Image (cartoon, rainbow, N blue to C red; front, side, top):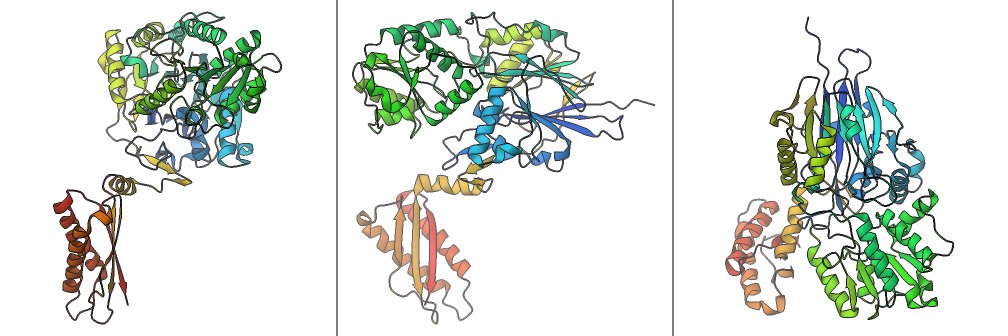
Length: 567
């Protein structure tokens, strides 16, 4: 009798067709056990920031329909690090999945707890938490043995995750880079991961698969920042991501050394630093940090402001300073403004406008185009080659990037000697099955369509509503209000017309009078018989015929809203 083959199923619910919305389900079904059933472990629960064609959407979260009815099988959710594209959906999804155990390093977990409280006061007390206090910790979760390894990334407490099962061992670095010449420690190596039980599956974040540039080292970047801070003729204002706590820590410690005062501004910036201080990750002289409203109590050369808003986000600190809307900071010509961040794809024009405005106000604006004042948290092609060479995986799955990046990473793996039939380029929803002998992708996918978060609504905005918003944004709205005699079915008086984002009424009188005549004709003709009037049909006729008429005159298609009032 042939022995039943146990498979590890790997199912990305997001992060394999975009940058963001990272969430992967790992499912092991022990067919030899009548009692155990399926064990499920989840890695990350991230959000995706809205794209330009998603008007009004706050962010997008993974679709967890596949996990419906399987909540009791979820052994834990593991978080690789604290960036929003990895933890941002946790407050929305954990409760829906029955509040399973969550596992992560202290800084990551504290960020999740804060986000949970921000979403729903008191909800963080319901969380079941296991802190990974030591990188050598091992955790047993049903058929899974979970281990961890160090990675470099642009946030404290980032870790790689190892999931050992009887069928295969998954190696997942989360987001990663190789920090060359790190400050105060040796460069990380991954050779030890080549000794894990085979077959091994390397799931590698692949944003750097098209990056040919030599990375800026942490030391080069920080030497430049130190020199700028030390030689600044006036105040130093540094805009960076609030999650760059390691960089903030270095700036705070350097400021303490050279007797400068640091004011933090931006809600997320203050929160991240407060959590890092509470955990003992940031240590500096007493009095280094001052409130933002005290910066004018010191000479300009003594002041460093660390703030958010380098992406030009509306209502963030740096744009408010530039627009003259900040209570305590007005840009001076001798201020040094440093963009210690990269430009998030899609924000290029916004950031360029912000820089233009800053250049008008200050003579000392520094950014990565003119000096190395930022290091990326992601790899390049050479790093991807190095990590594959060191780990020597049996199978390779590129993840956490756009499809073209995954394909380029697959090419790198193939050139490194991994056979094409051992490389899988997944889509969101792909069901990948791995066992001792093979890796394959099922023909059927699980649902991964976008779940939009709009205000307090989760999933109540779908494609139809989104399409309407796009049409409104592109062509506007045209409301027609017709008063109809209940007895005769004929229009009384002249229909009212309201236009928003389509035409300016005062300058389109001829078009409006023609439209009114057409509306009267449509209604009178449609209601002219002695039978009961179908008002839905009347509205459809107005919508269709007036739509055609307006397009013939303007070549635009506004959303037309007919309103019929019977009197």
